[in-house]
Length: 136
Image (cartoon, rainbow, N blue to C red):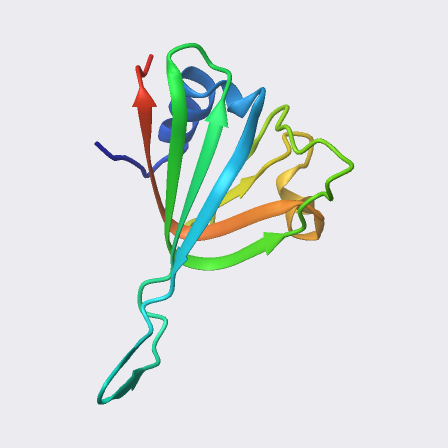
């Protein structure tokens, strides 16, 4: 079952109480749905869905995977580290600014610097999540 995040209180409850700011986690995979497609009659070229699903695996007891579903995606900045470096998340950030949710896989970045961060940053108008395993 998905749980919507709508407010700063929702963010705090999810990040602090449920996923511990994703400490000792890693992004396993991402899946993007644009909304555009081809048919035998031609192309439907509109990005009218813009949904990004991110699966994060965590060491939190009782939780196996956390799926974040970002809808009405505004942008995705993807600067993955190469195979010589760890991609472990020691702490993530989630902000609400101007009606958009901004996720950063680093908790050391203040909101005013997040757009210049060279890591993974996701900005979307809607956000919901679900877990496999038990949720605290």
